[in-house]
Amino acid sequence: MELKNLVAQIRKKHSFLCVGLDTDLEKIPSHLKSAIDPLFEFNKAIVDATADYCVAYKPNIAFYEAYGVSGWQSLEKTIAYINANYPNHFTIADAKRGDIGNTAERYAEAFYNKLQFDSVTLSPYMGTDAIAPFLKQEGKYPIVLALTSNKGAEDFQYIGEGSSTLFEQVVKLTQSYFNSERVMYVVGATKADRLKQIRDLAPKAFFLVPGVGAQGGDLKAVYDNGSNEEVGLLVNSSRGIIYASSGEDFAEAAANSAKKLQLQMKSLLAS
Image 1 (cartoon, rainbow, N blue to C red):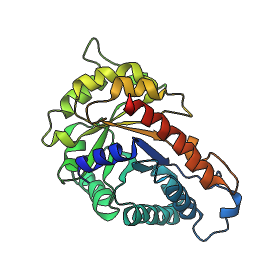
Image 2 (image 1 turned 90 degrees about the vertical axis):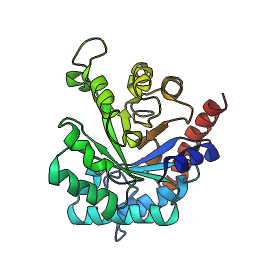
Image 3 (image 1 turned 135 degrees about the vertical axis):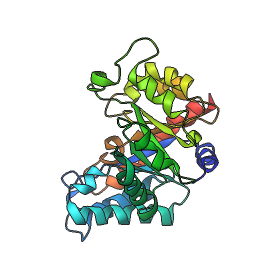
């Protein structure tokens, strides 16, 4: 997908919402558990219910790998369904891969070409060699972990002084890469006070922002500190949408939850 198409969808829908498909068999409604592929049936219903209110979907790969072959098949069916029925939605493989050389090349092949995701989240810990293979294809986007929402982020990401913290060095260096205009960043919503700092380092980049909703991130603070002229944000909500209800009305509840966030985003965009 071209970024201009993503921006057009954001403007058209008045939304920069990404729905996280962190699908857990233990949490889906009981009436779906007898289906041949309950993970896919749940995802399909969630996607159909929320597509009007969001511009992106983000399956968390761990939730599918945990079920072995059957989980991977559910993932394949989910991304194929999204691409076939909602081709204007941006897709993110939340895989957090971070290897080098031939291994990184194989990961890029798996997520970009085999599964046909638009993007994949990456750990930058092993440096340039871990990111460069994901920048070779036009219309594909590595999303680099910059500053995450979790408490343990402080263990490493804040190491350094002044403007030389590790997360700042990650952003500065990746902004110098060939095709760096396609590098995106994960920046946690609970770090909204740092979003402006990262935006100054990467003024044109898109940020994937988890942590709004269940983790306590503030949407307005994220927008005020992190947006740019093309919005430049994909704010993710997972549990708050997909598990809005555990009953037979789960899809309707998910739609209502997504619409509520979309309306908040519309208001921010109008301001």
